Image (cartoon, rainbow, N blue to C red; front, side, top):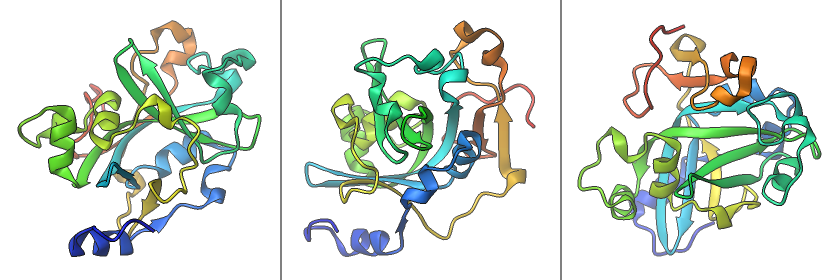
Length: 220
């Protein structure tokens, strides 16, 4: 799958993973997919550097009916066109001209649903992550917040459109599972412009995991 210069431990790590298949991404319920992405592992292999992190926080965006979605009201632009692809593609957009935010496109072709990955727990390639983020220690800020996740894993806007079942950028599962009782559900962050849709309970976090962004005042 990936070049042979990996260490034995890295090869063993990859061997323990099962790549998510097309059926995972093309389901209709973006909220359910957003929840089920918790605990899954993002793997990147860019510039001969392997990095991997377990997803700890997500947000669902429900396409043309969701005022917080880039595709609300069937908006189609050069940037959002990838959202209309069949589920399983990467959608990476630039926020504030600085942060590259990684989203997972879901649902069938022409139904523009997506899940924003907001935080993850580092697993493999932590030294590479520190180098990319210019941090000196692997504390929770390394991969907390969607901009930091992308930077640590080497994900940028030019990765938009990549099939997330490729051999250098994919999402996988292992034996780790997240039960419903360990999922915190709350409203999304930074979507006040979305009026009543800003209050939708479409943000999900793994309870008691330090690699998340700010916690809600009331856990549910």
